[in-house]
Amino acid sequence: MYPTAKLRIMTYNVHSCIGSDGIVSPYRIADIIAHYEPDVVALQELDANKSRTNHIHQAREIADYLEMNFHFHPSMEVEDEKYGIAVLSRYPLKLMRAGALPTFKWMRYLEARGALWACVDFNGRAIQIINTHLGLHWREKRLQVSALLGSEWTAHANCRPPVIMCGDMNALPCSSGYRRITKFLRDAQVALKGTKPLSTFPSRYPIARIDHIFTSPEFKVRSVDVPRTHLTSAASDHLPLIAEVSII
Image (cartoon, helix red, strand yellow):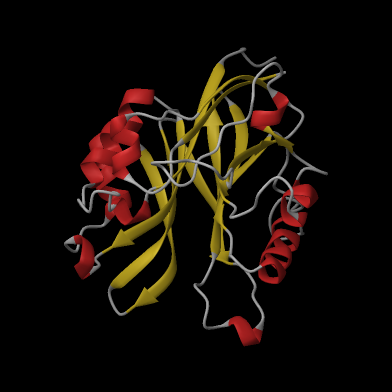
């Protein structure tokens, strides 16, 4: 038997730590994360060594500031400059897979997309976390969702439940990509009864629910929050999404 405990998950597109006010600050993002005390954080749109953001490795800087373990995957690399996603954890963290998601040859001009799968040792229980940032075009997104649900990711032999998939899906609940994922995993915002799902984008006037946390049936969703404050509205163009879950 495993001890019953709550796990707080946050997914957050940080827009290269460039706020809607134009200020570049990974420390402001780190302060937001610290305030809401998540155990695991999935971040998207992180710069590493890019001139536009002062050559800082943002994932490392935020993780060090929070004293969390992390893994970073660059979806795009140009010489020493990188851009991608990361998973941070207060618990031991093992990288399982990180790689590019597919696209069509005629869409190579679009931003490269990737995913990062890490295993969190949560009180002796292995929890699989898959963080991703999907494309904008519906055909590309459909291809990428199929890949994530396939044998290299969630259907891999080592991706045994409990599983959480999260990130900026660029997918509204009415989209085919979202509906495809929810055939296998539950939307944390919908699983929490008696509450209305909250939008995450754009941060100042959120009207679109495109950032998601999906969970396998082994999880019970205890609470969901999309904190909309002066700070979260300014720090990025997305709001963070937080879910507190326990293992049934």
